[in-house]
Length: 520
Image 1 (cartoon, one colour):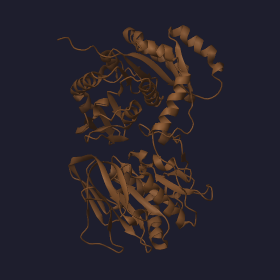
Image 2: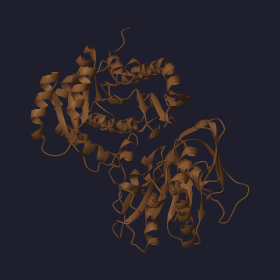
Image 3: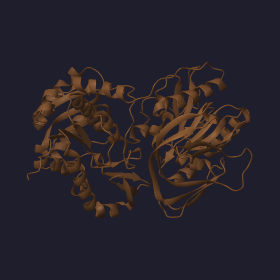
Image 4: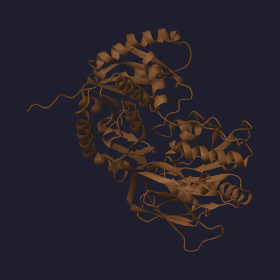
């Protein structure tokens, strides 16, 4: 029996990292889904610390989970069969088809690549079998000739899928035209033939001013520009990795200013930046709130006196705990927590790795991150040990009244090796369980102030702020601390922002040419 031919496919590759490939892929997925087509995203290999857990308890890249939403599909680990989560400059945890297979240094992973490529091919072939069309995303640049021999995510994947390629360039950075010409000159003849055209991304201003450059590049490379996509200001969608965050260009995140500049009726919320920060998308719902000013702290002097400070997840809690001490943030966070407990104003919250750092000690006997042990901040009477079983699951839970005024349902996901346990010897105020899962198991603990409100707390639940009722109740409690009137808050969801993105891309791309490439 003859097998069904693969569906047509189009792949976005970039001339550099952070060129906007992920959002262009999400936009095209949304546009094709709105036309009634069965479409799925695919990225063979992703390196990112922002990950997602599927309903099957499998871990995958956050960008492909967003693209799945754009398609109207549940997230599926086959959409991102290989995920690399860096634990240091030279090593990463390797996730294959949603499950960790080990921590590998660069040389080890290169030797493993043949197995990874088998998993990639199998995942793509299974996923595309039920689709009308596929939209793929590359990684970095196909012109990184030092990596070409081991490529499984750019041109090699395009060849396997039979995909035409659109090269995307970020013109906001500068050098976009040189990068496009240089990329084409470094590609081999067969790979150049696979490139169907270019997309300029993140443009500010009058696109007609680009015409001489577009014409010159097209003549030199014999490839057309299929669109100039404008810079989308303040787009509130989860980011794939920490590139924009580290560059300070994430929409809705202010600079570290010690909390000095803010509207008088606006809550000041601080996110602590960590060298190995992961899943900082946990604060996306907060930065979408009109009554919140979210900013970043990278040194002790940055912290100030916020209404709330958040210690986020980490892929190397031990190393990041050392960073907190060296940067002065550890001392600043302790002082802030003690003041919040004493005065009944302010909250220090830790999520996953942040919860572990709030405790007394973190141990890594199996060297899952870097090995050894490190004292924590000592605010919560907890000890954490990293063990070999990684907890991956979607979770429904209950936030107890001390967190937000009354019991509230929460949902999210867990991604952690750590097992945190209360210490036998407790101090005053005593450690209090504050969040449980649907089976009654504890997901988080904290300390209550004299007013009975949780002032220092940590949970293992990523996405805890996404639940509208819980988030609004928590923020309004913080507003009452400051004598401010409560706000209704806004609903958090991805659909409207995905449609906004898709509308802009549809108006900017030559969709007739795109459909022709996809044989539609």
